[in-house]
Image (cartoon, rainbow, N blue to C red; front, top):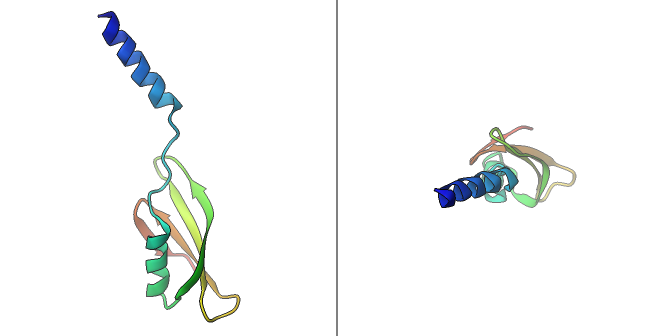
Length: 84
């Protein structure tokens, strides 16, 4: 009985101490969206990351061959959309 209480307490404390996972999309998904929007990426950088149940990541993708042209890609879970 005492062992089960300890295990339950340990599991609860571990759940409290573990950080919330961020959005799980990676730069590869953001790259695919940029390529579909006629923007072959030269550089991809993370602009904003929100953690939690509704976590999202926003990437800034610089287009190759054009100076100063970039698009923003918003990713939630594994789905990414073009912002601008």
